[in-house]
Length: 579
Image (cartoon, rainbow, N blue to C red):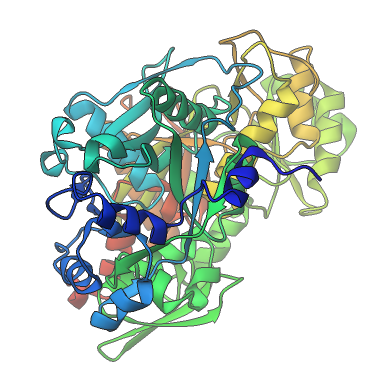
């Protein structure tokens, strides 16, 4: 097999190892920076390893990391020597460094549409980037700490949706020629993040390509990046673009942010996001956590002589009766109705004639299993006896008992009540795609599902099932259809997050009537932690209809609201304020 351009350079000794690079610095003192280089990126510093005079100096600089920041020493040729100076405080980063030589780069064969790429410019931009970072568990940026651009500091780029103006992606680039007079004339990429709820395809790829092409226009020769060794999805993208592994190392300081990297994954790492957000908050407060069954999300918390078992947000504090009232949607309906709260018309599915009569009365209906979760077996806005019959048959595998309910127009509102106080509220939207005139609907669904799965550890994706196909066919489309550029389409009727739905936080604008109704519902069910689903014309209007109650609400879905914090406050009041 013929070697590619990179391998040919490697065989000829034209691709430098960092031992060679350090030797080049030593030979050419006019090239080497007069001082060791530390570039502040807003979340921590990048320490350029080969600009430090020796391993001790680099180790000493890493140890001075500021609290709450995340410094990275990169291009470290002899990591064992650096670690030897502070073995209790430093560790070898388990990430791979990848490089693309621009002579190997090939532009995209076809473009992506619907968003623009521009530099971050103001406080609103930094806030938008930090919201993205929060969704991915990344360190936020403090723009006041950034090394100025004219002193070799980084540049942050944004992907901005053309229709909504929302920031849907971000990436940071560092020009090494400006930062430390890099004799190899390279640059690097950091902090790539894409909104997991974004409906546009290819945002991450376009951001990477933009940084590559921008750097090429500046006369640079290559781009490096660091990626966790087990991030298979990201590695597939980088391999597609032409990146190759580079034999160099990075070192970081042992701190709370990096804990899983140097301690290794504990049992909690196998938990889904809904259990892990609670476990992380408990551990932050010094509460003992025993993982009983990671796959099932079961764990036990111990603190101050108090012991509470949990399955995600369901705990010993929820009685079996309260749990039954939420699980059986008939009981939920009757309980809330008796409390004077607004609920839809409801009946058990019966004979074809009885079902047709219910449909004739209400014109549009919802079908759902009596005991179900995560949107399984639910079909909404059914308008013909055939649709109702088919939906009932699809619901029966989840529960032989199937409900019919009157359909109500509006937005799907989830309100989380903890300790009989509203903690978070969010409008839930069904899975939506945006056409680009190039990709089929099936391809757009697959692209969005991959992004959602990566962001939720596999908890959320858009299923290509009968309900999705029914929604497409109702619009005269199928998976092979191509939407015009900019055309938006909901590909499901239900708004469950597990089936690709998205959330818009509305806690700050929630109408007092809705908040009061949610607390009344929680008290009627006598449940300390509950997620309540309502249909509303708007979050800031008082009209509502209760749909159902979830005894195991997903707290991880409501950032930036402090759901996990309030949950642990309820379980262990004496741990409030513990850092």
